[in-house]
Image (cartoon, rainbow, N blue to C red; front, side, top):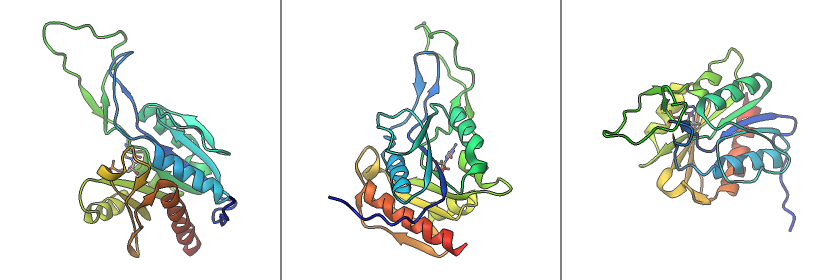
Amino acid sequence: IAFFQPKHLAGKRVLLTAGPTFEAIDPVRGITNRSSGRMGYALARACREAGAEVTLVSGPVTLARPHGVVRIDADSALAMHEAVLNHAAQCDVFIAVAAVADYRPQAPAEHKIKKKGSPPTIALTENPDILAEVAALPQPPFCVGFAAESQALGENAEVKRQRKGIPLIVGNLVQESMGSDAATLTLFDEHGRHPLPTGAKIDLARHVVAHIATLLEDR
Ligand code: C5P
């Protein structure tokens, strides 16, 4: 079956982040989270279908590279930060979907930490906020963020949108979405909130892309 896909983003360059990050404790251990990368990968695919040139900066996931998309692997928040800042000036749209760890071990051990008498203490330090940094560039791309919420989508997502200074944030009910192929999303922009019908991530991704295209036209 062939589906008609409107080329909403023809000629646009889109940069995305997706997946979890892995913050090393030592050569064999680390801190990570349950993000599967599916929403970010679905968005990368939807952007490509819409005619965009797509670069996907991906944390460690088990998903295949979407057709026609350039993928850059970046396991840690710092690696993701570097890859994004290397490409941010050359993109029209930046979509931050990755579940970036807020903290990383301050000084990863060079060798495997041995079991000793008492449990070790792991000192943590804050990771850079990649999305907020890109949004603060002198000529920022159109920035889209995600807000994972465990309760009624609403105030938190809109507050986050304004705090990060971005035109669009996608609120995501995590207990329904994480690791699943379906999700419940609500879009928040300067015009208000736009709930999307619960559905498959690829269908939601196409909705989000159409919404981004409309906002880009209005700019
Ligand atoms: O502040 P919070 O982590 O809830 O914001 C989530 C949004 O910010 C997501 O779009 C996520 O990809 C992005 N983010 C980021 N870098 C971080 C933390 C979050 O780009 N260090």
